[in-house]
Length: 264
Image 1: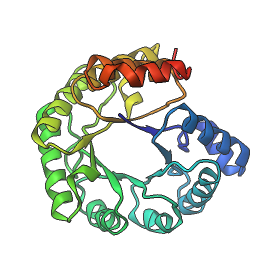
Image 2: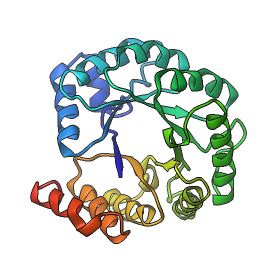
Image 3: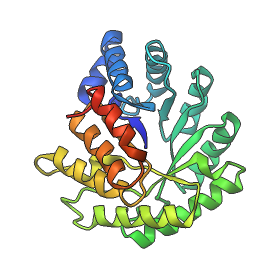
């Protein structure tokens, strides 16, 4: 189960403040905490700084790479921003993300291929924000066609079926879970991921809902998620879910994480 650590995102007020003030120590502590908690990639996002995104993202890349050797997830919808950042990364990155919008696809896919990166593909087109499982799977097929047609291996693609808040769309979680199972079955070798916390936006005790959704999604095939690995209860739910789903042989991953004190 691949973990993309979400905390260094300028949509979070305290991250935006740290970036604006160039608070290196704060960003370093965020990166180290996520790496030590079990992240596989560190996502870096400066998207709220309109007109200054490149400048701030370059700084984030430099600071994060100074304290961890984990690969980065470069989080921007702008191909030109990504083009500026890619030469600065030390390890093969993940690009977060493409959609089926032609400008975004045409701008970013060549960069994915050139740098041998992995890429998150959102089930979204110019006229569709996929809500039903059928819509999600249909757009997933188009993503697979576009990505593989560009000469990028299928196992470099992480499809995000998009999960919307259950507070406004009561069937959103179920539609995403159904789509995950169908996508993983139809395209052996592809990966699925999601922005986990979207599901609980607007309701109380969000962390409980996040854990419950994650467990259900893992049991239907989800093999990656964008989440906060420092949340020990969430990390524990992830490890336990892999056990229940038969994806942790002899429970060794769960036992190791328990002994290391990674969850509660």
